Length: 470
Image (tube, rainbow, N blue to C red; front, side, top):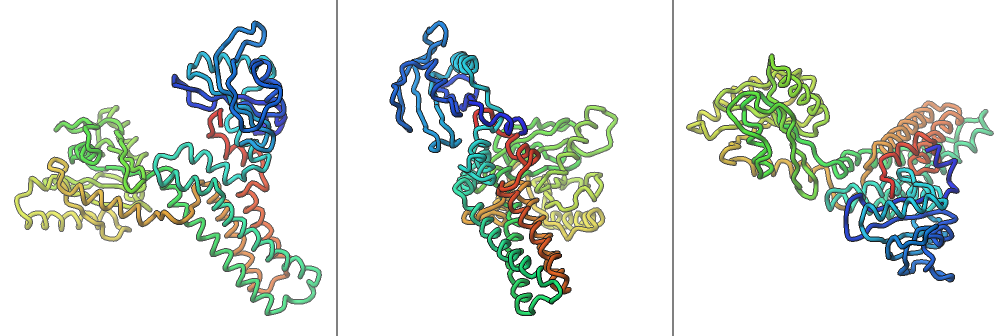
């Protein structure tokens, strides 16, 4: 990102549409010389050009004047574009050869190829958007569902920024009153003022905590729900994956160890992408390839939101895994192959035996819910889907704004920690400079979140995932 700071005045260009063939492709040029440089390869543009107006024009080679393509050229004047700079967008035919030819011409006449996220970075630097809105641009591009898209749009329109700015104003008010008391350090803060400041700190801290607690929902909207199917070989994990996806995604055989790698697939539930991961059966194995698959299974477990431990109703045994690997996981037991059990009485007896095993295995867990299923006959699949929908609904709300990036979450948590210390200092009647220092640090964290204070590390973290054209 340091490169951006050193080359802010360059006129940059890039293809904004995805690579490949299509009806059209869009190229973007931004910077002080966007129009003058474009004129060198687009002589058809009129001398008097209007902002937000589309012009039909030929693109030609700068030296030979040979026609490259017939295009539509849109002009955006300084201050009225996405980046805040003078900007040109060229809509040409969607051939990779043509787009690359135009980009080559632009770089030959003085443009520089844009770096990842540089257009959005310039929009941020030119105060068109704040850092939260910049992140929402990427979230909107990457959104996989209506809910994720709606949340990104709301952040782009400034809803989260507004909430954070209100917190900033409250902290500035508190900080100003504490700073004013430093000149009178020999005197204690008046009891009434101290009580008022403590109340305001508590209210502001509560708002920060509420926002940071929304991160689980925001992450769910952004990344979707990850469900890992875990169990011994031949308990029916692959058949269950196929049933949940309503397609034959995984190979199913009676041979133990058939699944050697992690097989995955996704569906949408309540507007959230739910990804299922069928893992290799957990067991001791002399087969090196199978052991690699088992290690991959354990790695998937670490990042799972929900773990379905699949158990064979005809031979109940839990996988040989360290119970510590299941800490802080949402775990459910799926008793599979109940179509092979002849009576309800036998099913209840099997469930009782399974609960005994579960209590010994998951010592720190409360009694786990057992769902009776048959991946073969699809019995109980509806109950699994209902469980997932309930889980999503519990963590999601259409009408509330959510924090979606770990950077935002970390800044909020750090700010809350500083406020907690400031409250402690006020409570023990410390000199006002101590709580003032903590409140000042909390303000700095809020400024980092909004992008009012930033460094190369913050910029890299925000913009490194962007594509070249955005």
